[in-house]
Image 1 (cartoon, rainbow, N blue to C red):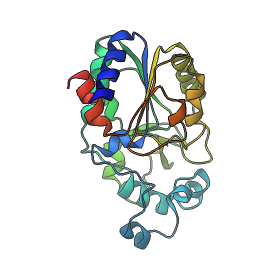
Image 2: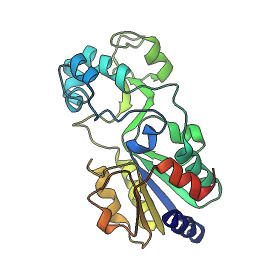
Image 3: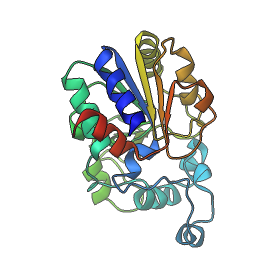
Length: 240
């Protein structure tokens, strides 16, 4: 495929590649995008996902929050796909400097990536809201109802909920990497969630690649658009 050949050539020529990814990267690991509401979802919950995953809802109805969170957001058996593995390989080669992700599943690290900037946090980290004690994903999965700390406080996942701010340090590092990149690969995201989507405006290079199955509002800005599976595209370009 000609587009993949171009992508492969650009990767070979580049020395400071940054990857910016969203939910589409993990759907190929059988983690559904929670935005897609199916019949089962509509029967099961009284609120839209954006409401349930908000800070105010979490405080008001933690039981309902955790019911949705356990059912729809936690996939402990998910494994990295070819996209995750390709990015880890590029980092090992010294070409990829960072993965900036909107995903919260930890699959980039599971694949071997080390410099992963998690804009929206991670389900793998959880802390007591009262004393700050750390709890793992396994601890949350082993609990029922609203998980509580040994001190009695409620355990909250380190996931950025609606109405919450993104981590300033993570944002600053993401902007730095994008500004210094000679190649920016964007994949598996429709670029509609802000402020994350606005980060790509900091890119100053001439190798902006968009890999997404559907059209995005930034397609005209890109130097290369590939409307295919991100796993097969990156896997073929990198050789995994």
